Image 1 (cartoon, one colour):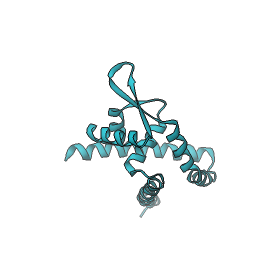
Image 2 (image 1 turned 90 degrees about the vertical axis):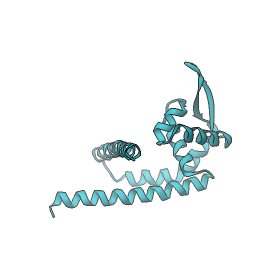
Image 3 (image 1 turned 135 degrees about the horizontal axis):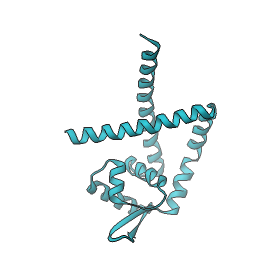
Image 4 (image 1 turned 180 degrees about the vertical axis):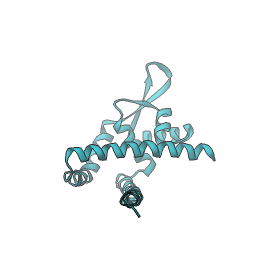
Amino acid sequence: MSNRAEMLKRITDESQRHYAAYTLFNQAMADQLGIHPTDLQCVALLDLESGPISTGEIARLAGLTPGSATRLVDRLDKAGLVVRHADPADRRRALVALTPEARARIGAAWDAPGRAFVEMLDRYDDDALALIADYLHQAATVGRAQAQRLTTSG
């Protein structure tokens, strides 16, 4: 096997291990916060947004049906993690944002894991970090596209 083929296999194998480890981590973090792992994913995605987003956008980002996204937002609202605002451009539509308390609670929960990830990343120089960031972005793009393909081809 060539060096490139060996490296590609290693990357594929490590990607599978990373996904499995991240799934375990996501479940443990959700358990720590007392919420469902899907709800945690939604909260994490909302935390990345610069402002409130629609339930339809949540559905798109999280790969959920509109009805599932609505139920998810209802659970998060009941748990006090999100607030709904009327969309100024369309009063019939609600926009969803994390509450300040949710941001603080999630931020506190991420404190120790965040430090651990920063410590791990400190071993890389800026060029390597740029490469890692690009890989993660491209892998997420491919993952979303393949998830879409799998859900629409069935």
